[in-house]
Amino acid sequence: MFIGHFAVALSAKKPAPAIKLGTLFIAAQFLDLLWPVFLLFGLEHARIVPGDTAFTPFDFYDYPISHSLLTSIGWSFLFGGLYYFKRRTWKESIILCFAVFSHWLLDFFTHRPDLPIGPGMTTVLGLGLWNSVPGTIIIESLMFIIGIFFYLRSTSARDRIGSYAFWGLILFLIISYIANIISPPPPNMQAVTYAGFAQWIFIAWAYWIDRHRLNKHTN
Image (cartoon, rainbow, N blue to C red; front, side, top):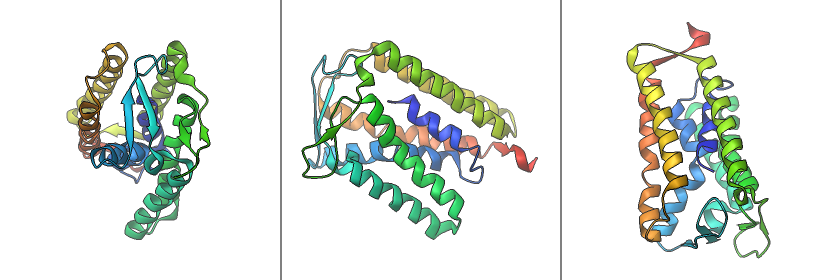
């Protein structure tokens, strides 16, 4: 899942307007921000297998540190705990904790059974939505539309940048999503690893947007 994770971050702005959108993006994508780091250092592994599922050619056969159920719970509490240590706000910290864990939940629905319970455990989970291209696109698109709706209900543009930057990001995410669907498989996992770091562009963009938008409850 791609835009579905960003949909969670956009939606979370409604119950947690004090949290920067960039921080929500980090939380919702936290597991996938860790994953390329672990790939780079050889701590986790994946391979390109065209046809592994109908939607994606990736075989995620070894990623228990970033994406197992138990470590995902641990990363969630760690992220929420660090935010609480910095801000001393329970509500926002709990929301960020759930935002991090939402990544695993969405992966559970989309992945074929390849999500391990924990490191060293052989039991794997996944409901396999990726085996249906139309189903994946419809569900993710609906989630993304709902996320945009809640974000726009929660914020308003302070200036032109606040409007143009937001819709520019939305357009860029949609184009990236379509490109991932129609493009041929990448040449190797090294390219995938480095592409994973490109997610920080979206995060920086989100922080920029927030500087040019107002929370509606403060207007």
